Image 1 (cartoon, rainbow, N blue to C red):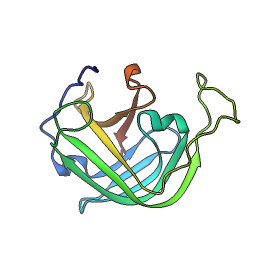
Image 2: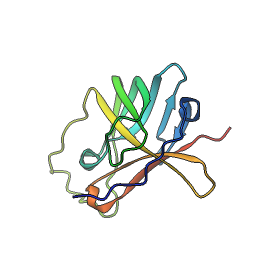
Image 3: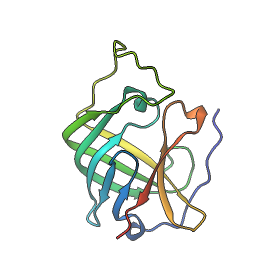
Length: 145
């Protein structure tokens, strides 16, 4: 059984709308109308190990439905129209065996982001990647103007 992560319950849609960045040129834009534009977003949890990265359009919602790793709020981002995919280079701890068969990038995908606040009380969107036991986090931070 996995430990739950802290739950956030005070986020509003206006807090979530905007552009969010992560490593290696990842950008996710969540529009106020519920539409999403995704650029080079990796898969979450064990899907991360397949090293595909997706770009395209879809939808997003802020929900307090029980999902993910806590009973607080979550952001669900659904890619419904893939426009591109890429392959992430293996990290230092990942095997470099190119003969290893990996799952192909999906045409559609849904991410469930946990929410938390950093030490400055700024909102962060994140998910776990790789083995959830490791608690490795893929964190998106708001794009600064």
